[in-house]
Length: 307
Length: 290
Image (cartoon, rainbow over all chains, first blue to last red; front, side, top):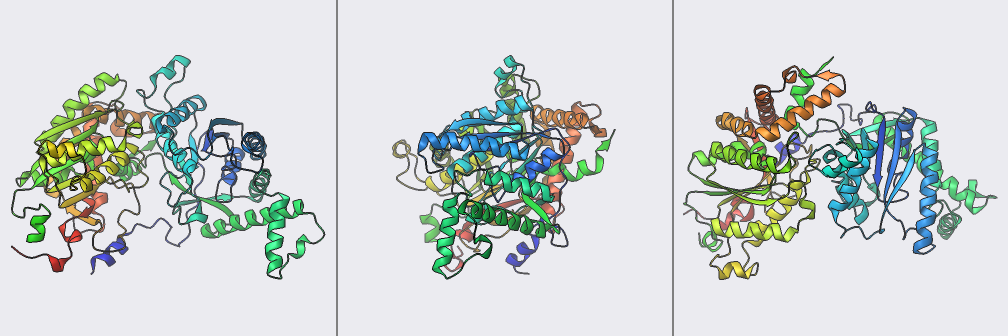
C-alpha cells in the first residue's frame, strides 16, 4: 500500500460510525466561565449563546469575562463604542441568564503585542475566585483566525484554565484566601466563516427556547448587528438583482433587521443540529478532564470506579 | 555526494543527536524510546532543557522543585544514554513572556557547537496539548534548526569560531493529543511526514527514565487522585499514593502511550513523529550513493 493511502486510512475519525457528530451531555458542575475578547463573542452565530443558555438551564452559574474594551466595534468612535458595547454585553448576558460581565478592558484589536502572561494571570485570578468547572472560549488551536484578540485571549485561556490549579502559580493569591482551582473541561469554538477554523468533536443539543434566547442575545448588540442600516444594505443589494423579501414588505428596517438575524440563527442552529441528527445544536471542540493524559485514557476508562 | 558535503552532511560519521525539550519529562514521554535506541547504537546524544520546571510539583516550593527536577532530569538522561544536559533555565510554564529570538539564538549556539546529524524538537503544530511551553519551544527550535545553517544569523558566533550547520534529520515529537496528527502533509517531499519507530526493545528503559521524574510524577498522581476523590470516584492503584503506586501509574502511562502510537502499525510499542530527513529535503534524483 502506498504510504499516503496508509496514512489516510490511519487518520483518526472524530465523528461516530454513522457519520453524525456525537451529542455530548453537559458535565456535572456548578460554574462555567466564558472567556472572550469582545462584547458579542458569547452570542455570535458560530457559538455559544445556546450552550450558555443550556448551562444556565441545567443549574450552572455562568460568568462572562470580556478581555477587550470594544472601542472599535460600532459607529460612534472609541469612547462611546466602549460604553455602548459594554451596556449591550450586559443586556445580552442577562438574556442568556448569566450572572455577571467582567471587563478586563485591554485595548480592542491591539492585543497582539500585549504581555500574554499578564492577561493569563488576570484570568487565573478570576478562575480562582469564581471556581469554574467549565471554561468556554475560542479554540486556541483554531486555524485561519485573523483577529489578534481572539488568538491571544484563546492562548492565554489555554494556559490559565489548568494552571490556575497549580500551587506555584501566583502564590500571592493565597493572601486573599484564593486557593488553586482547576477547571477540568474546555469547550472551544472557532470562527468558521474565515476558513476551516476547527473540526468539532462534539455537538450540544439545544431546545427551541435556548435557540430563541441565543437569537435575542445576539440581536441585543444593536450597535453592530440587527440595526436598520444592515437591513437597508441587504435590501439595496437584493434590489440590484431585482430581488426582494416578501416578509419585509410593510415593516420598518429595524424589524426587518431583527427578522433577518433570527432567520440566520435559526438556520445555523438547524445546520449544526443536522450534523448530530437533532433539530438544533451547536458544535465545539471539547477537551475532557483527562485528555491531557493520552497514555492513561484506556487505563482510566477501565480502572476508575464509582465509590 | 557533493551536494551532501555542501550541506555539511557527513554520511558515514557516528550520529550526533541534539534533543530540545521544553519541560524535563517531555522528550522522555514522546521520544525517549527512539532516543535510547540511537544512544544504544553509538549515537552521542545531547539534551537541551529549556525550562526549570519550577511549578511541576505537589506542595513544594519553586526552589525545591527546581532542585529536584534538575537532579531527576540528569538521572533520566543517564538512563536513556544521554551524554550531557544543558539547562537554559527559563521559568516553567512562563515561556509566553520570553523572547522567541532569545530562545532561538541560544539553541543556534548549541546546534553550531555540537553539529548534530539528528535533532528532536517539540512539534509546535500539535493541537490540543495544553502545555503551551511545548509550542513556544517547538517554534523557537524549528527556527533554530533553519537559522543555524545560515551565515548571517549571529555573526558573533561565527567570530567565536562556530560555523553554520545544517542538521540533516529532524524529528518533531509530541504525545498523541492531536486526533489529526497522522494526516499527511500536502506533498511527500520537503515537508515533515508521519514516521513510526518500533520501541519495543527500549520500552523498559523508557519506563525507568519516566519514573525518574519523581517530583512531577507525584504531582500527576496526587492531582489525579484528588480529582477522582472530589467527584466520587476512585482508582484502586491510587488508594494509597506512595512511591510504588506512582511508579506503577507512570509505567501504565508509558505503556499506554506506546500502545496508542502503535495503533494501526506493525509495531507492538511505538513512538510517532513528524519526520523531515534527507529523503524529504533532497529529491531522490539528486542523491547518489557513496
